[in-house]
Amino acid sequence: MLPALFLFLFLSASAQTRKVYTTTPSYAEIISTYEGFDKQSEQMQLITCGLTDIGKPLHLFVISKSKVFDPAALRLAGKRVFLINNGIHPGEPDGVDASIELVRTFLKEPAKVPQDVVICILPVYNVDGCLNRGKYSRANQNGPEEYGFRGNAQNLDLNRDFIKADAMNTKSFIELFQNWKPDVLIDTHVSNGADYQYVMTLISTQRDKLNPTLSAYLTGEMLPYLNEQMKKRKYEMCPYVNTMGETPESGLVEFLETPRFSTGYAALFNTLGFVAESHMWKPYNDRVWATYELLISLSELIQRDAVKIGTLRAVAEKQVTLQKEFALNWELDTTRYSMIPFNGYEAIHKPSTISGQQRLFYDRQKPFTKQLRFYEHFNAADRVSKPAMYIVPQAWAKVIERLAWSGVEMKRLNNDTAISCEVYYIESTEGNRPYEGHYPHSKTKLRKEKQVLKFYKGDYIIRTGQSTDRFVVETLEPAGDDSFFAWNFFDAVLQQKEWFSDYIFEERAEQLLKEDAKLKADFEKKKSSDPEFAKNHWSQLYFIYQRSPYYEPSHKRYPVVRLND
Image (cartoon, rainbow, N blue to C red):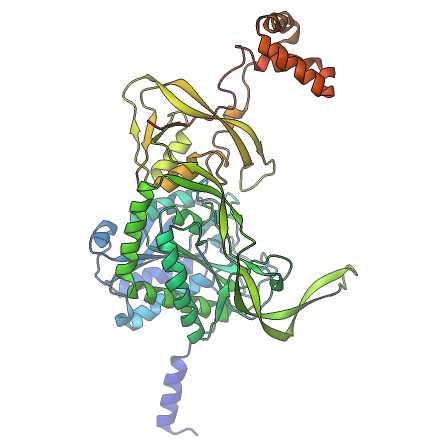
């Protein structure tokens, strides 16, 4: 029989042992847990921030040592805001449980609540998917026993929705984001892909896309600190395993997060963004605690550098207002890379027992540490100069409301007026497959013209020189990969509305060729150089029609115009 004192010490030590996670709470249990936290401390408050597609509210849990919960007042007081987004993919719930443990730590040890950092936690963002709970939707994941589903009530992947904002969840998030203006954002996930030794990998805002002032701090100070801390906490970390080829030995490529993603959207507003990617096939318990240690490490870092982060973001915002040229699209620079250590497993190919064909296999009995190439640089594929202003006709209400949600300042015309402006015509575009509720455009080619167009009382003027300029340029310039044009908001202009009857237009086409020598020359050149065209009566008439006064000038004319005066 154990002595009483020894038994007491044993039980006390056991009580302090970390919980072993094999399950994750349901939506009702998550909210109930946070409601309980709210009642336990005046430094904590659970609030609602709009609705989700399934009709339930989006909750935000705020931890503020000063007991102040007004975002504007907190900014005036120089507090930094750290936003933790959980459950955007509810089948990846590691951050849900890790954040609950983070709050429990602060309740047990109030001294650990950071003095200068307000921690804002979205207990679960994709409420819809969290309610769609089951055991089998993630075939390659090692626990928990039950979890939510990736798609929301509209079957949207919410981490592709931050520009198009089709979901109510996204509208609520954007308004929350613009209200709280986080300095640092982390989105918690679980990875798919290669096998390796790490429990945790990390995506950071792509360094070349981020404002240079912030990028230098991110790469020179934040990432080294986080890697050092995670190693000390027994969860050594590496960059997200996004491979150049089939296996990690081919090299790792830094993830390029465009504005459709949470951190890509955040970067448009000079927010430092991270994505925690725990490894799918590690035990759920290890994944939860690795995520917890990352959250703790990041909160401590923000507290340490609270003044510096605030100063750097202020500099970055000022630089954006003065910036003359913006990159729209990016391409990997394969000529530049660094060498990083990587703890992996030997990858081989062996015959599949299913198909008899060769299959990839990672041998966990053969771990290794190797130096791998890390391709971490991207070059701007397209650049555009910032105009003095844009004009958005009021007819395009869905675009206007999304600009307003993201804090863009706009004024309205007081009178109908004709304005000389720069317009784009859509020469060509690619993309015809369904993707997240759209058929997005890519590789858009443009033609510019100077025209005098009529605008009407109530149309919207956006003057540049705002801290939101990067968001404005990347969404309103149609060639951008995540522009509003790319996401089909302006597709109506691509459809021609007026046509002609060939048997009636025939005589008019003859007359046009007689009256216009250049048209006649272009027409004959086209016939001689294009045999198919030369045999096609309709194509020849349409060629003439397109170059005649009868052809509608608004066809393929992008409705948002630029003014440089």
